[in-house]
Length: 282
Image (cartoon, rainbow, N blue to C red; front, side, top):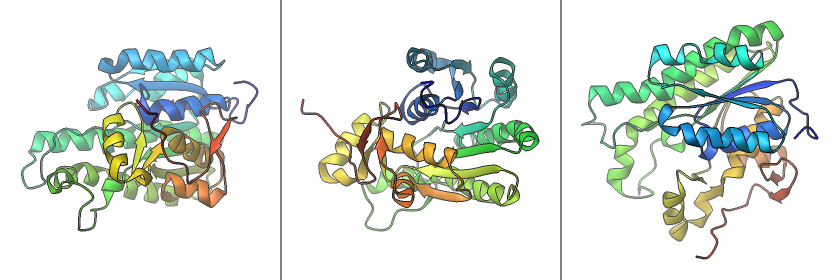
């Protein structure tokens, strides 16, 4: 990985990195020289160890930090832990998210509402605020919040079962809050050298956690499903580049930058913004 030192000397904190989009982004940043602090809850500890092993096997440096992001106290020292082991945190990628209940907005109860906003909104804000003083002191930083198209109510006719769309309303509300916060933060940080963006898949990123959903969606809408490398590529372009104040989808970033799609090694070209997920024949 040292052959591609674009982020050499930088430290990145990536939440929810035990699999899927979080792992893909962590691997891609490590491929460009960043040292990684990757986090998950204790129940995903084995996956987090595998993420670290993959990074180290490729020549990178990674540490794992376990924390329940729903717990204000547990997440309160995450950035400090990363700094103690790796040095100042330059990049924060808030990928971890949860859906605490699949219930329509008229029925979802207060504990589920609180939990979803705690993980999906309050935790990202807390981690950003922990990292900002150091970023301000160094006049360089990158904040990337992973969001979802569910931040917007889908148009009628709904792209799937009506009950499912309604059940994702509160999840979407938490992501909409994160989007709005990202835009306000980017405006606040104008001219500071710190950039803030929010990134979503076009529809569905094919990852371990979304494999079943992605396969089902691809039967009727193959254009909805992108390889997880698409999110990693877009994340890399936003972190390495000068764009800020965007709430944007992965494919749009690649198209805007006229960038090829690389494998997670950051070297091998595997497509472009139009590339769809490949489902091998069973």
